[in-house]
Image (tube, rainbow, N blue to C red):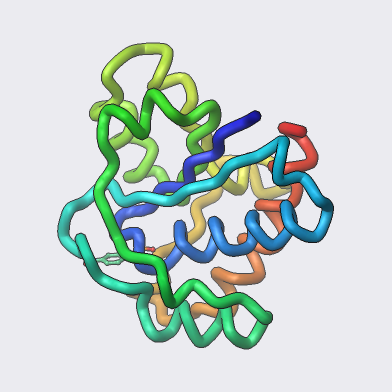
Length: 152
Ligand code: 4NP
């Protein structure tokens, strides 16, 4: 069982979208015994909040329902649980590497778009600021299945 933890700043936009997309791919392929996915925040700012309405709308448009999700900040137990930590931008990477309880945990941290040829080193920009929720969905819908293929 491979545990994938998706992480962004608030856990109300990008990482819950990534988790919902990953869960759909897992369910579509019958990979429930191979993968478990979860999402958390680097910041406690949005703790307890549901996904952003723009994120929920973009997900609904693509047949995903993440309305039951609630934001929570990452814990030491999450670092330990995760085999791979997939994160969205360079600030997320820096924060997680600083917060990681061990070097082994820090080494789990990956930038999401690094899996896509031609997109290495690029960020999935925060739709909380850009309001481009459909672009966020499209970037995640390209990268997240590629991660699952690579990790399975
Ligand atoms: P996310 O978006 O990191 O994709 O969930 C954000 C949500 C909230 C805030 C920033 C980004 N915020 O500053 O509260």
